[in-house]
Image 1 (spheres, rainbow, N blue to C red):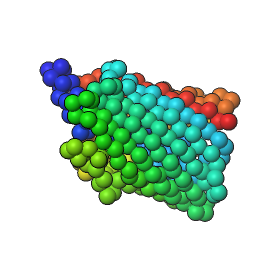
Image 2: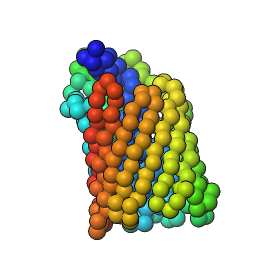
Image 3: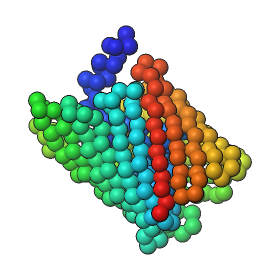
Length: 270
């Protein structure tokens, strides 16, 4: 039964995953909280919600690796670099997924800025290239994502992002549509070192997904995380540690049929 599910998953993979947008977000800290990503600030905002780049205060680089379901064919790698800019920050990002039989490449440039102390907005312009092997050829496409983050008060945040609302298609034969993705969420801090997160999202291809996350900061250096997501259902957990100019995050997701997907990311502040 497990092999049957795995075979179906691999056969439909090109239709399910468009870079990281139809899978889970870049950054092991986001993976640890169930894939809640619309509140991301700092370096991984370039991949998850460009509005979060408004909180880039120094040049920062990040790398991220995910081994989906412990299969080398589903290894997902991402790298980003961000610098402060006028009233915010800008960043570039690249990522790739797959092997020679299926290979997906993403490159993006994003800018996010503050509008006062409580509100930020951003936009990212994307280039995608997908290859289905020698038999099916390859295609490319250009799209964008935009997002906002709004701090209601000291305890409550709201966020929204929209990816590819115009549903562009890969220039391939036959053409393949890149699905749009709408995400909205609310984050609440009942106490200073505990954050509860909720995100709902709708894909034009895969329908609705609900994500829940919890993050506890033991101090300014150590973070503990856990989360749950639907469609497909799965649990996740992880931790993070900040020291000097580095932040290390590790996480894993568990799918009841396909198993574990370990992830890790490293952030370096120049």
